[in-house]
Length: 419
Image: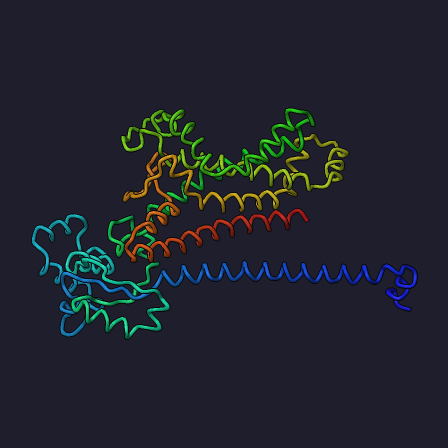
């Protein structure tokens, strides 16, 4: 006799209740599957939109038609470096040519650099008359070319990969065709580096104290409650806190004045150091809470075995508790970095620049970050800025995934060691 029939004979209410539980289970299973499917669809649409805007046709009005610079029918993109230098010399003023030579002799530059000089100083793109997405460029190419030829006969049409090597190494510019994310990328990296260096030791240290040393009293319970509440505080509040403490109260430190830095552009404390410290405050509660959970998850039997062998409390924590808790701590670090690298509001409050053309040279430099750069570009009306904003989003996602990948590798390494 089956278990179900035996249960039905012993309890006449068992079968109807079992069917009802199975129906509820099936309903929630479908809800969870649907939730997962919706999430995957949203992520797919997000990636599709960003990639679609990062590539496509662009129509540009030039001062000189690039086709007119061809030599014996060979277009400029296929000419050798010596011929390109001759084209520059023939088409720019003597003063401009001497200036280019003073900056760096053209013969000593790479082909790519000389070609870019031809584009910037000879062809001289004046304005973008139209941009199209990747899908439009693939499906309506002939129609687009015909429309541009009719409305702008002098315009050149080319397929533009807005995300390219030049985009990564070029600074900000008022011309979307030559603008890049180098300055913003360096600003983001330096800011996140300061955030990790400051927040990780403080977060892990606070978690160890609260779990291993702190007594269960009213003061420590109050501290724990405040940490839990701070994890949900809006990020702009941390920006106001950073403005009051790091920019104004600690201005001599964050501006570098106490170390002899006298740059007038950063004398007000609105520097990378202030940004990193502000973001460290922002992610500290999340780090502490995740580190506490990781430390709490370590079995007490491990601690007792260590004490039984004569180890001190600190030796037990350092050699046994921390190595076993490190995978969970690094999981919290991944979440913290993911939150910090995409923040904009607190950095705007403490004075991050929206337009800056020089790279940060120290923690006391003016700065901008990728999220702020993306916001600045998306707020512009010209379509070309929306395309480079999409390209910058891909750079930001790649940076985030790279940092998370490093943390995941470290987490897996500690997890293997702890087994």
